[in-house]
Structures are given as C-alpha cells and as structure tokens.
Image (cartoon, rainbow, N blue to C red; front, side):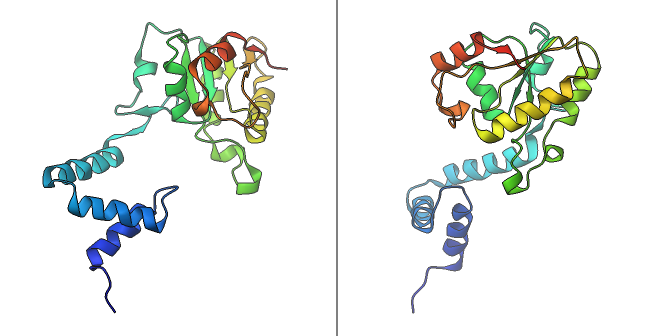
Length: 202
C-alpha cells in the first residue's frame, strides 16, 4: 500500500502538534511547504523557529517576553514604575499596549488558577509579584485577569496576598465585555473603557 515518504509524514506530525491543527490541515501545510515554498523561504521559516526557541525568554522581573534579561517595558524609565498591571498571558500585554494609554508596568502570570487542570497558585508567576511589592516602590496593583471563573479566582487569590500591604492600592479592571471573554478578543475601545473604569478591588 502506498504511503507518503517518511519525511512528509514527519512534517505532518510536526504541524499537527500545533493547537487547532488537525491531520488534514497539517497535511495541507506539509504539501504547501513541499510544493509552494521556495528554498529560501523554508530556510527563513526554520531560522525563525529556532530563533524563537533560542533567543526569546521571560523577563526576570515581570515575566513578559524579552530578548534580554529585562523586557523593553521594564527597561523604560519614562513609564510609571509605581503601578503594575497583572495579566494572565504575554498577549494581554500587547492588547493593552495597543491602546497607548497605560503607562505603568506589567506582571505576567503565565496562566490562571485552574484546579480542574491541576494549575495551582504555585504554578503561576505570583511569588515574584509579591517580591516586587515587598520592595516598597509599587503604589498600585491593577488586577487585569480575564473575566472568567479562573481569572476571578486568580484575582481574588492575589488580592488576599496583598492584604498584607495596606499602603498598596489594589484595583480590578472594569469589564465592558461578557463574562467568559478573554482580553485578546476585546476591541480597543472596550479595553480602554475597562482600564479607565478600574475600581478598588474588595
């Protein structure tokens, strides 16, 4: 029985590892690489894959994406270093930055507390947030986790930890979007109104 060469099968398996890519789509991608992409495009594609794995890391302070020890936002002395916005994912930082309104810093949790999936507070970038607050330079923490059960659970957990720092204002971003919707799917005006309407988190 005929089957594809092993190199094609391997490439199909590799594409199928991507989220949302089934076998049929992976097969289409593999044949696109084989028949449509030029050699230099393939080499550039491979180079970019390797670069992402080798050159991109998490900022040692906030957990955002960086190519140095610190991300560009943490390095920016013109930003307000007394305000920190807590988000779930690196992509949420980009969503907020597109507004060009928020001028504070960020803290990326790399997820949300989800006990059903075995994700506990210890699996998230929370301890380093508390360490940042302990230094005494932060005056406000904005909790901007998603409007989901997991996001709210995470926000409440962090709020309880920050009770020990009475001089730090804790606010929760106001959501003008349906409960259950992630930040990355919100339009910029909705995000702007949510940022402007943040309130003290009790």
